[in-house]
Image 1: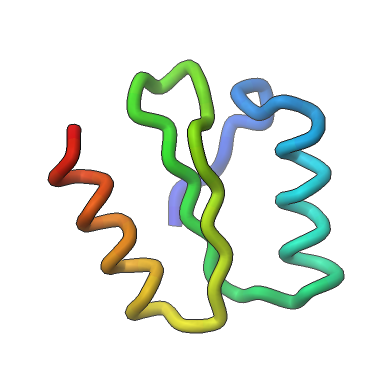
Image 2 (image 1 turned 180 degrees about the vertical axis):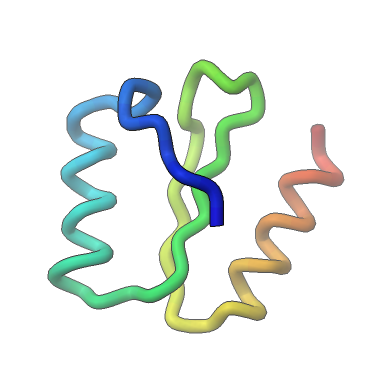
Amino acid sequence: MKKLNEEKLHPLQFIWLWFGAKILKWKYIDIYSPDKDNVVAITFSMDEEYIEKVGDIEKNNK
């Protein structure tokens, strides 16, 4: 898992990320940032296989 640079996240995105990880206890998080400057999507899941498939789709759509 890559370490996230918090500077790229909008404050509301950071709050949502914290909420999903700490409150909802979702274990797997995919952060989609195609241009490396803006976060476009955050996907949470309890299923690692689902997160991997989402990541594959994101890579293929660049």
